[in-house]
Image 1 (tube, protein in one colour):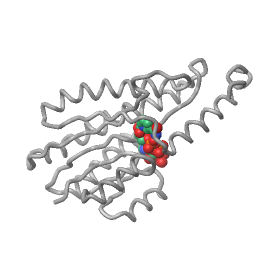
Image 2: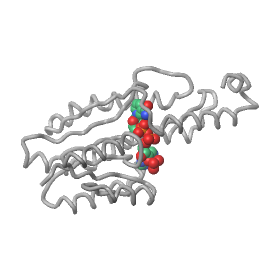
Image 3: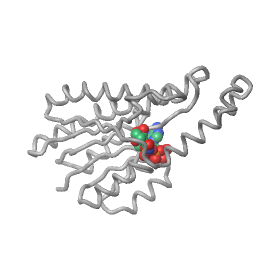
Image 4: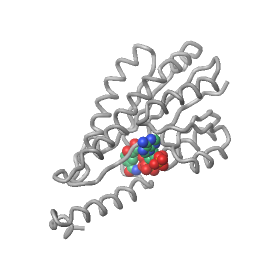
Length: 216
Ligand SMILES: NC(=O)c1ccc[n+]([C@@H]2O[C@H](COP(=O)([O-])OP(=O)(O)OC[C@H]3O[C@@H](n4cnc5c(N)ncnc54)[C@H](OP(=O)(O)O)[C@@H]3O)[C@@H](O)[C@H]2O)c1
């Protein structure tokens, strides 16, 4: 049986790149997506099994667990790459609480919940294999360095760094290795989404924040 990996946010950017990389190198990749169009594209890739999952939806996570368990049968899951992530650009003074919470839900609560739900499959892998299971959390340079206008992206990634360190010890007791990856700025659709979102938000704040508008 080939080693299998669950990759969240596989529709785009680094998640898609990792999906292509691992599937081409003989891994079975459970690639999560949200829109059917992305699911259909992922389906075309060899060794890729698309799994529908909004990472903030606990029912989706449970359903994904059931689906992946069913496909793996007696085998376990070798790795999880907690990759799905979003940014929200707004000066602190004008941060919208709902959107701030959404960033925290996607970037920090989802890696917690998904890993916790999938632990039984990681344990199952460990029971049969010498190369032990692992969880890779994708944080960011932004977890180490505060920047203007992305307060909750900074906060969520700093939190993910802390969570990963704690997971390293706790899951280490189960022989599950926890790896923290903190990429630098990488050309993916995220950068465009960040710029567009920032410009749109700052325009929305125009009446309140002429200072910011004059600087973009
Ligand atoms: N690009 C950079 O410069 C950079 C630097 C450091 C760290 N990172 C981190 O690297 C990771 C990947 O980012 P990227 O640059 O590849 O960005 P990206 O191209 O925008 O991809 C983000 C992925 O996350 C998914 N996603 C967002 N919200 C979701 C939700 N609620 N449920 C399920 N999936 C969701 C997106 O799915 P949809 O297509 O359905 O929206 C997409 O597949 C993120 O954690 C990001 O913070 C990026």
